[in-house]
Amino acid sequence: MDTHESQRFETLSAATPVAAPGRQREAVETQRSFMPPAMHVGAFVSAAAATRPCHPIGGDFFDYLDTGRKFHVLIGDVCGKGTPAALQAALVQGILAADVKSGTGAAQVVARLNRTLCGRRLAGRFVTLFYGVMTRDHRFTYCNAGHCRPMLVAQSSVRRLSVGGLPPGLFGDARYDEESLSIEAGDTLVMFSDGISEAASRNREFGDTRIHQIVSEHRGVTPSAILDRLMSGVREFTNNGRQRDDMTIFVVRYLA
Image 1: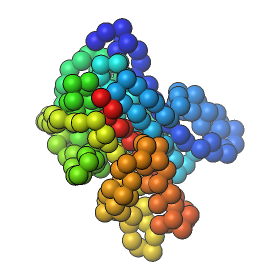
Image 2 (image 1 turned 180 degrees about the vertical axis):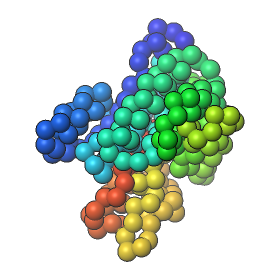
Image 3 (image 1 turned 90 degrees about the horizontal axis):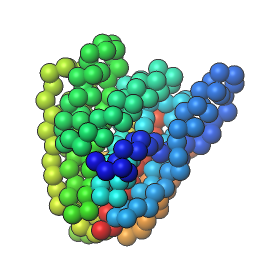
């Protein structure tokens, strides 16, 4: 990779500050200190992201790296909540920071992460993960390791992205696949954690169908507008009720 690609794999977040006493407040500020602005406009992409933990800190995370030639996207969800999940998320992000710079394929990056996590033997601490790379020559290559299936929204279709394998951290010998797609200007990638799709109200879940409907109805607006509409849709559905899981949305528009 070139000089720009050697820069760190950055973390985005639009998390709202949460009041927390003592060390908990310090943990919130520490996690937030690694999070640059949640909106990004590059040479061939526009992106917006937000995460809302259900505790002061959480295990959802998303990252990106824009090299000018490639745009790396990542969203993940660590098993569990609160401080232990946040620490595991930081570990995963640190491991991926080095691997992404290697320039290898999406499946290889996820496979190496899986072997590393399994080698540490962190009982019950697996992570669902979606990692992909957009390029200026209209290609998008990804690996979905047990994460909620993102939606690739084109002008007249919505495609679910499921190729990959098991969540990293479960089995050291797990195999991972990747898929490479052709993308066009205006195509939009919508990624989310299960805190969005499984948000509940009166024993009903928000569900993929509602996400699909909102994305389809708003495919012509900006990534930040799609994100806002999804977040407000969840709030309306749950009647602003108690949040039971971390929520994260990451929307990327291909501009080339």
